Every structure is written in C-alpha cells, then in structure tokens.
Image 1 (tube, one colour):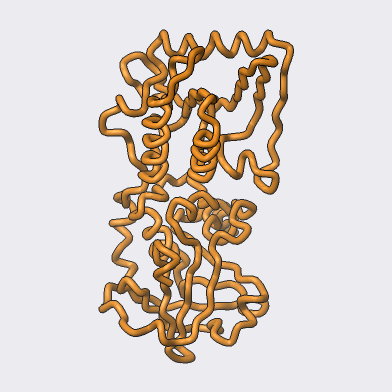
Image 2 (cartoon, rainbow, N blue to C red; image 1 turned 60 degrees about the horizontal axis):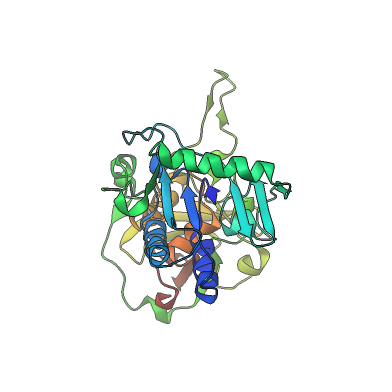
Length: 329
C-alpha cells in the first residue's frame, strides 16, 4: 500500500485483521510523513504495526513493514508522496486500486469523504506498480520507520502560540466544579464537513476592507463554535456574555449570539477561545500550528476526546473542561 496520510483508526482496524489472519503479508508506504511529520500517537501506532509485521513470516513476501518516503537518497524531505494505491496479490490474481482515498476512516469509510478510486484486474498496471515500489527501495527512497532517528513529531506548541499566550490570563485552576450542572458540546460533530467553520473558521472568507480593498485572512487560532438546537435548548447552555475559567487555569470573556444563541466564541477576539482549544490539541501532539492544517475527526481521535463540557456555577460564569480522557469528564 502507498498512502499520503494514514489514520489511527484505520491502523487499529488493520492490526485486528492481521491478528485474525496470520497468512497475510503487508508492506505500507506512508508518503507525507517525512515531509510533514506525524503526531506522536500516529507515529507510535505505525511503529507498533511495523514491529508486528517484522515478526511475521511469509514464504513469498519476505519484506514486510512500514516504510516512509524520502525524496532523496541522502534523506532529503523536500518532497512528499501524495499517491494512494493498494495492490492485493492473491492466489486468484492481482487487484490494484488507485485513486484519492488515504488509508484512514475519512478516506475509506462509507460515511467518510467523497472519494474516487479505479479498480484494475488486468495485470499490466499492477506489474508497473510493483516495479515502481521496487524502484523506491532500490533508490533508498523507502526507509523503514524504525531506522529514522529524530523522526519529525508534529504538534508541539509552536512559536506563534507562545507569542500569543498574553491574550490568555492565567489564574488559579478551579476545584469542585463537577458538582455543577453542565452541557456538552461535541467538537467532532460533523467536523469533517466543516472546512470553513467552527474550529476551522480560519479557512473561511477573510475580512474585506471597503476603504482599502484589502482582504485580511483569518488567523489560524480564530474559532467560533456553532451549537445545534439540542445543545442550545439545554438550561445550562450560556446565553449572552459570561466569564470563563478553564479547568486548567485560564480566564477570558465568552459570549453566545445569533439565532438561539448558537454561536459560541470568546468576546471581542475570536483568537482567545481558539488559542485555548487548539493549544490543548497542539500540546497533546494531535495538532500543529501549521497554518494549512484542518481540525478533523482524526484530530480528536488522536486526542482521545471530543467533548467540551461547560459547567455553570452561576448564570454569568462558566467553567470550560476539555480533558484528554473521556473518563475525566
């Protein structure tokens, strides 16, 4: 297999299938990992898969494992491989699938992205694909993941976030807040369809100045959560302006507005809520401050939780709680 990107859910399901069928051999090439890096959780999942594959024996396929594409024989990472291709070599013949689907739930699941793939069983394209795979190995462009030192791990808080920390006021972390009523917002709900809204509103239309004609792109940390009716109708859902204290000890002003108060944001500056939420995901190694990176369902899968719980000590105060483990809610 060659895939530009991989998802942790797909890796877990693959390992289950391999455990059930000891006769399957597998070779996986991850095309964009060296150029763009991996989150710590995805890297660990691929290393575990690689170690398991190295222990498997197969009479025909001697080389098994997880490999990373490098664009040059000296370890350059200037280019990535964005290709997606899957070759199934079975006793009854070969089947090659080439298209747009990454090896992830969003790329392969029936309710994931809309993708297009072509299936060929004639043999000629499969033969060329095998040759291409071998050329990658001969040119030292396919490097076993366990042989890469100091693998680039994405998601450590970047310089941009550290410069912006002044917009978040550090306070004493609250205690005993779990006794208050609360409302839950699932940040992953429909997130893969929201490439320009909610946590991804930074990719929406920029701000246009009528006076100068200049469009100013939105900052990567801009966030505005749009809640559904079942959330806004809850008695514990905040309405209007309110004071926010986060469970990890930050303070800012929040506000809800729009129809049914569905738009939840930080007051005055959209970046403040985003700085806190995206900052948590960055520090957990599930998101980088790359200005082109979307927040997706796989981001929350990597983090381990997608629920933002809002506790309400009073009508004008709220405690935001976004733990990494659902059991900590």
